[in-house]
Structure formats: C-alpha cells, structure tokens
Image 1 (cartoon, rainbow, N blue to C red):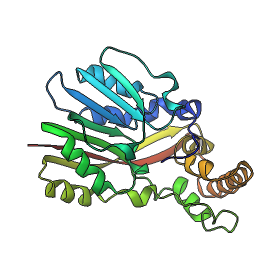
Image 2 (tube, helix red, strand yellow):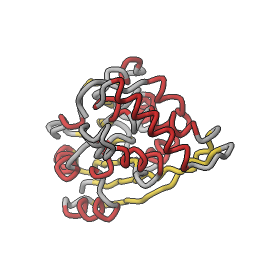
Image 3 (cartoon, rainbow, N blue to C red):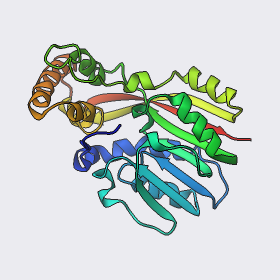
Image 4 (tube, rainbow, N blue to C red):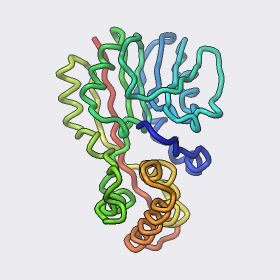
Amino acid sequence: MKGRDTWNLGQYEKFRNERSQPFFDLLKLVDLPKGGRAIDLGCGPGAMTLLLHSQGAFAETVGIDNSENMLAKVPSAPGLSFRNADILEFEGDEEWDLITSNAALQWVPDHGSLFRKMHRALKSGGQIVHQIPNNGSHPSQSVAYELESDPRFSHYAPNKIDSNVLSPEGYAEFLDTLGLEDINVFLKVYMHHLEDRTAVIEWVRGTFLTHYEREMNAEDFAEFMAAYSSRLLSILPDQKPFLFTFRRLFISARKP
C-alpha cells in the first residue's frame, strides 16, 4: 500500500453517492452501546468516518489512511481525529470497541495476520465490521489483469487485491477459529446505473487503477490506460444508462 500517492480526491468523489451505499449497509451491522472507541482503517476523505462517529455515538473515533491526498480535507468534530498511517502498521496495541473498514482491506496482504491483530485489539463485547470490494471477475478489473502479461507492462508489479481477499467461507471459518461470535459474512451485488459505459473507466480510475498509476511511469501508464480503455469498451455493451454491477463482501463478528 505504500509508495507514490496516486489517490485523487476529485476523481474518487465523482461517484460519491454510489460509493456511499455500501457504507450505510455496513453501518447497519454496528450494534454497540453509546460511548467507547472506534477505529476506521482506510478512512479515505473521512466523510463516512464522521457519520460512523456521530450515528454510532462513539466517545472517540480515529480514522487512518495512508494517502495524504485523501486526508487533505477531513471533517472535524469533538472526539474525531485522523492519522496518516498505513493499515499495515496496525499492530493492535490499543483497545477498541469497534474496528471497521469500508472498501480498504482489499489492498492489504495477509488477512490472517491482520485479523489476529484486530482480535487482540478488541475489547470484550467489541465488534469488527468490514466491507471489502470483491469484483475481480468484472471486466473492469479482469481486463487490467490481462494487460499485466502484455510485454509493455509485464515488468511492473501486478495488482494483487483479489489474491488478498479470502472467500466468504474462508473468513467465516477463520473468525470462528479466533473464538469470535455472532459471525455474519455475506456477499451483496450493487447495481449502479451510470450515464454510459465510459463512466466505468472513470469509476475504476479513482480506485482500482491507482495501483497501476503508482507502479508505472507517466508514459507507460498513459499507454496502459489507452489499451485498457480500448479493450474494455470493446467488451462492455453500449447502453445508456449503463448497469455497472459491483460485488462486495461484508463481515461482522463480536468478541465474547
């Protein structure tokens, strides 16, 4: 997750309403008394962290993100703070009532180790509640994976976000081995009606494709984007509006 900061807040928020939909489903899974401490791993621009803080009525909420660009205009509220830090740096050395993440854990390797740290950091009765994108089979991602083997781009590090994410059964079984209770793991498909198929490129340009921009020099990334766009548009139907389906994985569990 470290490296050149290629996150662009303006690009990311082009689809703010659509991107916020899964957060509200995540928020419904939070079931904790008022007060306590919450941490939001990969908080992005912080607007959703503020909602978590206020609607969950936490005494303290901390959002962390490794992108200074994303943290440039975070909101403020009593008890709410933000840290420029990488999720990989989370060691579970503080105690929390809620450890949550909305659309960020796909960037983090070794979820087994990460979830053990979360378990260690949870107070008794505390929750983990996460939403993880799981859309690797959609052409918007699979086309990019195919281009990774193109000789023009094969010397760059591949995008591994899909290999970072376990199956729903894998998470359920692992959380059970940790001794967590009230385990709830499910997939939901979101249906976004975008203006046209080119909007899909704009969507992933603000998230998934940031990996390639970070890894590549400017000239190669421009060539990658041209090849990606041409190939993707040859696959997606020319419909207006365009239905962009997006799979997301939800995880919640409680520490006894």
